[in-house]
Amino acid sequence: MKTFLKWLAILSGIILLVIVLFFVGMRFHDGPIEIISGGPFTTGEPASTPADWSFLKDRMTIEFQTLDPETSRTVWCAVYGGRLFVVSGYMTTNYGKLWKQWPHYIEDDNRVILRIDGKLYEEKLERIREGTLVAPVMAEFGRKYGFTGTPDPVLNGYSWLYEVKPR
Image (cartoon, rainbow, N blue to C red; front, side, top):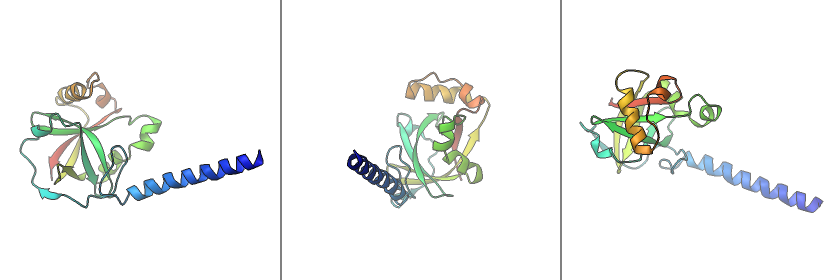
């Protein structure tokens, strides 16, 4: 029995080490892999901000990188009236406070780089807390991702809504 527990402890330690090394290594990777945050973008060609983001209307996710710290992730996006919006949910939950760090980075430095189809767009994110845009934008998120898109999550702080704007 002691031998079994010893080998179980060794195996558990190896698995934990591999997981930690994977996440540390991702900080140096060119962008995120699905929901796993990555490092700064090292590939892509600079592009100017489009006047209309409608080409992303049916795109499920986009990649973006914060500048301080230089980390990247994928986020849901919605287009309303040719304008681009991203959202971060779970902001009032304990696991959201651990998992969703990027909105807090944006409070200090709202500059971001979007990487879409190999093009890099230097933009900024402006948080929307209320107003006439909240309801139709959240309805578009609801249509796209299959949930009831009401403005309530934004208005009560559960979800943080941002508009992508040129720098």
